[in-house]
Image (cartoon, rainbow, N blue to C red):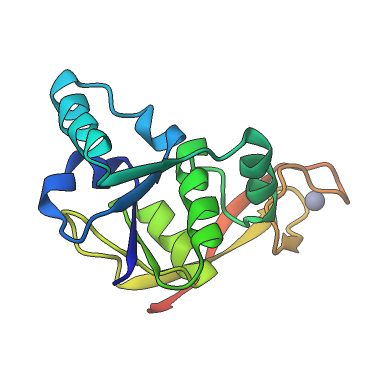
Length: 160
Ligand SMILES: [Zn+2]
């Protein structure tokens, strides 16, 4: 049975997912603010059906540096990616966040949607300088050649 890693959307819908134990990170747990959801999640924690891992800020920052399109991913999203990599094959991430789904897809990490269907397309981004037009594959904010602002552009999309 695949090890199920939950992001915040997964935690909010934990009672709709079967196959415990579930796995998450403290960064994700911090996003559960409402007392009702908190109580449900605490029940899973007490019964051992939800296991929480500590991902350090250093691990998150290191992972962020390796990602090409990470500007919209929160620390919590990235902590999920780090956990999935640590748990390796046989783990699957439950998330409704398209940006996170897209990144997981590019990394070859298995994922599924919680209440929405998973994305059908995969996007590849390039980074283009708004002044000189040079194109870069990696996320940078300032063009190293002319100092212009670099913006993200869609390069291609295709079926997963
Ligand atoms: Zn430039």
